[in-house]
Amino acid sequence: MHTTTPSSLNRNTVSRIVVSTLKGISQVVLIENAMTGFVILIAILISSVSLAIISLLSALIGTVIGIGLRADTESVNRGLMGYNSVLTGMALTLFLTGGDRWIIALVGAAVAAIFSAAMNHIMKNTGLPSLTFPFIVLSWFFLLTSYRLTSFKISSALVPQDLTHWSLNIQGEINWLNGMMKGSGQIFFLDYSLSGILLYAAFFIAGWRYGLYAIIGNAAAIITAYFLGGEHSLISMGLYGYNAILTIIAVSIVFKEHQRYALLTGVIAACLTIPITASIDTWLLPYGLPALTMPFVLCSWLFLAARKMLPSL
View (tube, rainbow, N blue to C red):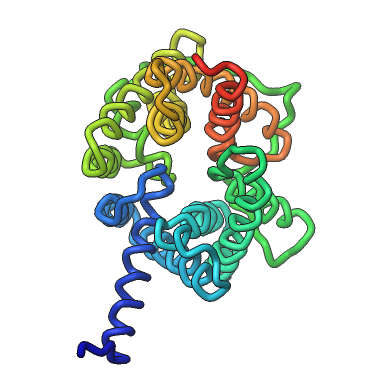
């Protein structure tokens, strides 16, 4: 008779944690694939060692909290407890300063895991996924505390601006290739073309549709941004593409529900992220906050909710 030894149980537990942690990284782009998560981690590593460390630790924290608090086993195994933690940890590391920002970032990652579980429960009755909403709200709250609590020191790059003195700069050439390469990297705050290429490879590892749709969504977004008169520098940096990539994957692949025109509606949704991004950026300008992935969340919710009333959409 075969018996399970304590050592084999420990190995199984460690293996589960490792796989779930990598899936937590891949779930940032709505993919459940440990290898995709590993390639994404490498893409982050070649851009920034510190960000790679914080993303791995944040995903691990989210997974361990899910196991420790006895969250739904399927959610933990699929990495759904980790992806908001990953983004929160990375955002707080980047947008806060001071030596203690690492501690704050990891605490934020832990809170994000709990917030994700709460949001999933709240959103269950709506039939809509919580997506990255916990990460967005927590990051904004943590960054805004810097104006009232001295322990939090916001980066000088996030400067509140007066809308009455705001002027749009559309000068300069557009580097279209950079816009395509960096669009995927900006999902993880990476402004590095090689990282963007690796991220596309991570998409294709999960399936050719993920990779192809990511390219289509990014291309549709930067073309739309150009014709709508978006800032050339932002287009070249990929800042108009990353929300579109996430949106087309959500609308056309992950939550398509066998819709006949899933790709078409996904492209339309990707294009719609451009005016939504511009609007949210303007709304947040007086607070000096980044839009993060809020355009993706709002646009995806809009289309997924509309499908419940308009089945052919």
